[in-house]
Length: 227
Image: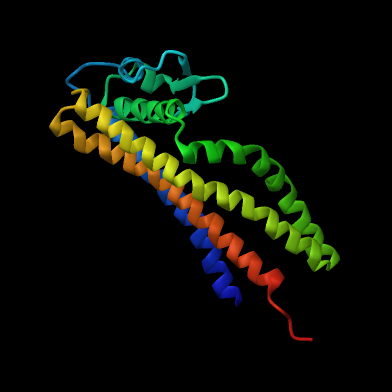
């Protein structure tokens, strides 16, 4: 790859995630200013949807941090940021419902979520090893080490690929719950969908970058060189 091509590539893999983050933040903030007619907070949305789906063993907690919302399947806790937990807006309802989508996945033994959960300890190990192996391989001229580093990277890429259907499915479940129970009105539905779609793009961007880097490094270390 030429120097110009390499600079373009670096700019691209930096700009894609940046664009996705800017999009999700702007969409989130826009609909965080729009109250929902039902007047329920994110915490109430989460609690209501869980009860409607017969889930009783999951706690809901408020945490600090912007867009720090997540579901912890190990400790059975849904952690909602302050804006989502206390807010009665389109964004708070959409994000809370999305996290409960993960809860429902867990409760119904959703296959892809199980696969992702099993991959976590493996990915933690391979991710920590991949960069030192790559760096050591390049510095020492030991392509075997570098090749092993690329193979280790494959775990993280597989994890990203598995994450996509998990996140899209959670958003699909969220929209179904929001609309079927009248938590959002027909006019508010579009905004909730935009919030969820914007969030999904952050996962798509992360996956694209991970795949691109894997392919680039694989071409470098596995392609035969002219003597």
